[in-house]
Image (cartoon, rainbow, N blue to C red; front, side):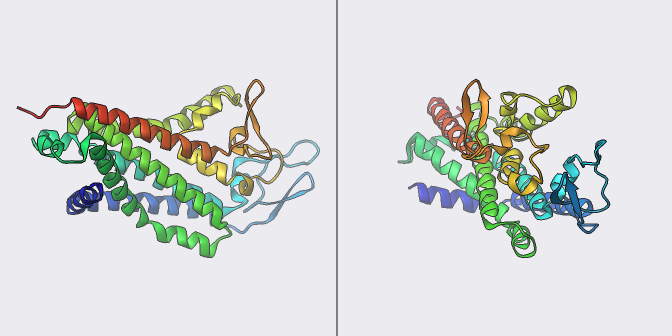
Length: 317
């Protein structure tokens, strides 16, 4: 029953003008990201920059500041330029994760509210799916819709695998992070749709919540660092829901060229190098695994809340 409901929902969605609009918007976002990466990273050859005797590949003319002893201090530009392919992967996958999550949230916003406004909710409730089945089918249809649009960007990542030094496992992690963002974005849209019962209100709320979740924490952390300088690990937990931070954590080993790095310490957590969070408690897990787990848990909670809201809904008189 769920499979049939998902297929019917997908057929209806694919016939709408929104498919073309969403695809063009995603394509435009990825194209802009590619052009920015090329303009920033692809203009000059990569010489070797020496950080205190450790070989480090930079690019362009060496503009890195040095101290009195002549030892270069790493900057964000030289750290990221060490692996242009990894930087492009982080940028492209980050744009796709945020943009795809927004697409899922916006399209999920009309899943239940649209049925309520068209007065077809009573017909949906009479099916054998039940409340949980209806929510699962709506979530799966919205997620697959966003995933199909995201797959249209696959050739861009294929070029990274063929023409750069990006390891295959990093591409797999990037795909998982993007899929997690699409899933939680779809769940946010379904939740807003079932709770607010208005397509317009759900549309606005879902877009705002997704932006806050995917971009807000990272933006707050960045602004705080500009005001106060380096922040303790506990404050870095703001980066947990950020897909861009998750992608950076998966590429931290390729981006760093010395023991001194500019990325937040939380992004370097690993089983071999656990990071102290608070007191004696350490985080041995890479940030991207925590972000994926958070996406799954948040999706389950939102679907459960949406199911409860659906059971309380009554069709329009």
